[in-house]
Picture 1: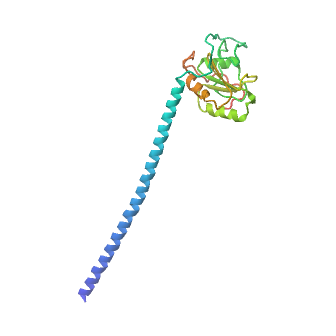
Picture 2: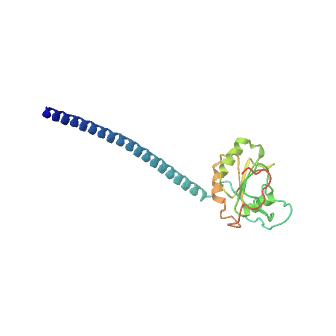
Picture 3: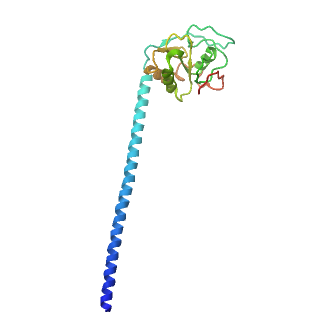
Length: 217
């Protein structure tokens, strides 16, 4: 009888050991699947991030290469004056690209109303690029210009009544006229001339001046 009971205990223990072994094997398989899945996700994220970085590096290189070349269509005005004066100024160019100007600059940003010439010329002296547009170009074009400016500092964007071209980009002594916000030369102009070599007062601020009405950002 004892021998039979002992055999039953051994059989029970063997069955239990087999069940436990099977459970451990199942756990190992589940863990392998879980960690394998996590590893695959991590690998996919690493690959995606790497591709984004590589793509951005290439975009930056392309932008730098474009900015290092002359921009077709730019008009140069090398002999503009730069005195600080009070009151209105008659400028030879419209919009102006330099000349005598107010002692106080226009704070850089996006404006939905025209900004004063005299103050904005001072902003360009500090290295700002001033993008002006005909108010009649339509909201879609204005939205594209606003997106182009984005979070860039040292940029003024404003409407300019009676502008002789749909869009003009101006920096100190330089101007580019284009027909559309999609013109790739606009972005290159920003890359090249925001605080570029033409800047008369490098390091000077484009904030702390005046903020005319209509500032959107």
